[in-house]
Length: 522
Image (cartoon, rainbow, N blue to C red; front, top):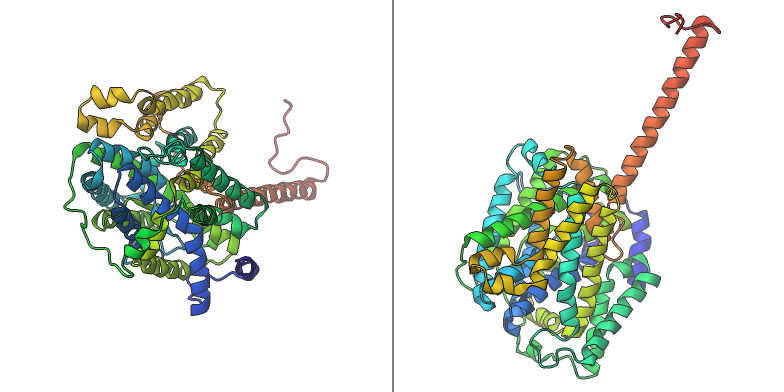
């Protein structure tokens, strides 16, 4: 692994492959597989968390993982390759958004869990995907208007809420998984702590490539230790098929319920901001100008992939900031590398035995890795809020009250389960939904619509999301560098202009005033 990482790093430093260059097959395979390694843990952890929360059987969980990877591959190819006016034609990997985890769990639990819950989730996902796809065909001004709903005080609060709400999910897994016979046993916390420690060590002393796959390596090492101690069971691997193909509506016909659909539409609004940021960031990295049409094509790919995800038994999709950082780190800019990664993911999505191995990761190990990821998400939100003037009472109120709303479902769950209509509960029994809605509404009340700056807002969101992933915080730096360069250029131009004016003044009049100067006394 070390030799591979070194080779990738060394080769990457010398690589400046243009975005539209088709590399030789060996390089496409090597760089594409690297993207899969950086992406894999983030890709599979969402179906694992959602599947466990809905108490799916091991066989159903394996199918969910396969469906996710299979659809990720198709979605990434659409985004990078492009089909007509769909797809940004940039090296953007598509993956299931973490923003949807808590809302999907809330929807699923409100629907009673199991496969019946999946049908309600898929109905909402398909509808939200179609709505996103349709929205991306509207004039650019319409999207910029939506962007103005998400200034830093809102995006920072939403990302912070997302991390805070998800941390208990990771901690429950660290304890052994809610409902399991050994929930709370010390050995579960030992596995979680060991996995977490291993990940943190890699992030501290590892090379950039190792840091970028620290979560994946943590899952592998933790599961290996658990297996050697007899606490990881791989019996379902032998029972799984070698090859399996994801089929549409495997779990049944989706159910379209109003409140879950509204909740998923809110999720997609947030993911649109994230994809916009990632598109601008990767455009800066590869040196390709990103205009409103490029962003629209990226969002159409998001919408199409999300609708396809609902059909193929998966979830909402977004451009992954993790891999934006990898593009910058390796300097491999060819979008066809992402196409190769998409092919790898489709192949992995057709191997149930591989998914069964992933599904066998013990709860304690998964909880250790998930807690690190979710804590980093919360930290990213806090970093974004660091750009906000919280000495302003109105901004402080927006953040504080929104956090209070976000904690309501976890603190007083009985209010939602016993005193609220089930449909309404499926919408509101989510810290992410309440926190995000409160932040948007309060910001409109106190601050009104923000400045119309889609590019700047997109870069800020990309920076926050990239910072949430170990080893991948470098992605938005390209945007920052571009801004710094523009600023430096402007300063240089001003200096030259001032010098020219001074020279002109001296030439025209020696020590006297230049032509046209006001010589009257003050």
